[in-house]
Image (cartoon, rainbow over all chains, first blue to last red; front, side, top):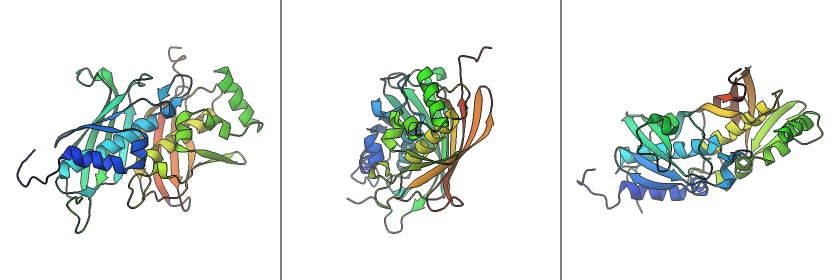
Length: 161
Length: 151
């Protein structure tokens, strides 16, 4: 993170403020744990209302998808920081490697690995909380790959209070 | 299992509304999904709701809510096509966002491209104004059963 032109707010501030403004994400109870230039980590707690299969209590894939899409958008914001742009999703693919265990929170790690003039390219991984530092990829719950369109806001390239 | 099978069969016979299938899924209720049958064709609806908003200033629907809606639509659609209904497990889900999802009702319909013994391939299309102008299209693979995976 560069300190030149320090804007008075951090990437974490921006991400948290952004998530707080998104109604659907607040209902998913998303919490931004970390946000730096390379990586964003977002936590989603287990909630009964997000269950997709009432027989197993497993969280719906759609909720995992929403977590990943949101984390990807935040990864873009961290790369573009301290400027600000809206980055609607162009396309996104999620592979569900394992079902998350009921009653366990999950953490999504998103990384914008290429920012071109018009498009942002993002990779995401989802872990069960507490296993994110285990290197074995078999612990992964889901992986994702997405592209986002950069929409520069005229006259609003900086976040203002 | 048997409860699900008899529910699915009852829906197929028209004795139980399809909505009953949706109401047993907590996440589908969380999003507020509804289903309407036109003959044997199912159209799913995500009624406009502030809880599904993403960008608050546009306002636009959360892409994740739209994707979750489409995934759930495919799951219900598949359940009704399976001889031995079991909740399909999503293997992968791929979506293209074609237009902004405005703050209004969203509809979805599904097409099963291939229904195999273990894997189903489903195409889902979502629209708001007219069917011919989808806001998102998706394709997904579902695992239909693991109990029989070794036979």
